Image 1 (spheres, rainbow, N blue to C red):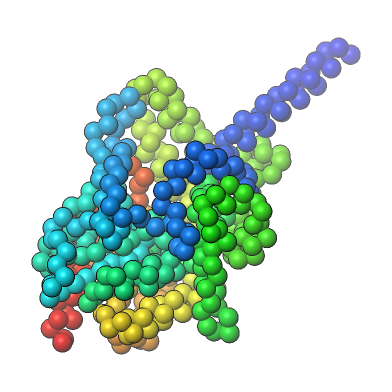
Image 2: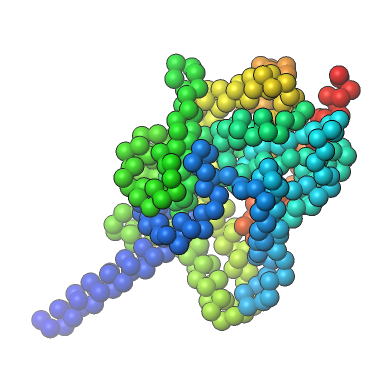
Amino acid sequence: MLPLVAIVLALVVGAVILEVVSYRALERIPSVATEEFPEIDRELLGKFSSFDPELGWVPQPDREKQKDTGDHLPGEEVRTTVTYSTDEYASRVCPAKERDPNADLTVSTYGDSYCFCREVDNDETFQNYLAQELDAQVANYGGGNYGLDQALMRLKRQYPDDPTDHVFMVVTASSIARILSVWKHYQEFGNILAVKPRYVLEDGELERVESPVDEKEELLDLESKADFLREYDFHYDHWFKPHFATRPYTADFLEKNEHLRYAGYTAGKELERRLGRSIPGVDFDLAQTQSALRLEQPRVRYHERLFDTHEALFDALIQEFVDYADEQDFEPTFVMVQQLRYAKYESEHGPIYGDLLDRLDERYDELRTIDMATHLSPDDGDVESLYVERGEGGHYSPETNAAIAQVLAGVVEQRAVAE
């Protein structure tokens, strides 16, 4: 009898340990949610310097930050950092050309982190290269994790103080998901500070739904706003709940082989960190990044479906951009750029946004559209070569930004000839 009890006890203990290990592993896998309302402490809140009650968050004026690119192995000295600097307008600085209130040509850009040009220095942004091409200062009002909605809101708030002849709206295809979001955590698990306003369509008209957070302190108790967040964030029902891990966690962890691979690469990186040196023969950082990209593929397909189901909202936001351009008398250009996860998927399946740009071209004579993927296709098909190699990953390299600048310069020059 005693051996049987010992066996049962050992099995129970083993199951408990496996359950705990599985939960801890799932916590670190980006495609799995383990908590609806993770704790936000005051230390984390204090680091959220970009909070904005109107837009959710926004780059602040006259700031300079240095970011480790990750271009080093564990235990090595940091070799490379990038510098992000903003001017008094909270535009990222443009070293090539200073602001000139009497300039004959003025250009501004709005959009997401691809517009801001994360992971490269101030003089490696496409805006800086564009300024060199045009001999004109180019404002950079990109915002990390912005969708077309927030970029449009920022444009309307900023433009009266910094009017320009040309405005480029630069976003990635993930914008289709971002315009349906109120709390980023419901679609980007762990992004718990990002609460934002959004637009909804009411009888075919855009209606703005304000952010439920007026003061940064309110982020400490988001659970009290649960009903609002669940109602207005489309992803709560359609993405968060289907990817929410529940007991037994072991079953969720073992459900996909990629979970095991990602956990293994993560453990390898942690071991290297503790040892203070790299383990020969395996680049765990690269392997983890590639595993994360594979885990991202269902999200890309989800976004592809959103372009079918929420085409009307996206089109209405473009209409608002065009109308505002007419009202303020600037030349509008819409630019679609690609995150790495989309580039790899679309190289095999075609653009997830379908015929969006063709439809916009047919609808608006006054709007120029650019599908940057058609201008940046490498001859050898190696789309990864367009992006920075390490760091956060997925943003364009300086060389790619220079190529983007040439495309945008062509638009400005063509319009000048047309006039």
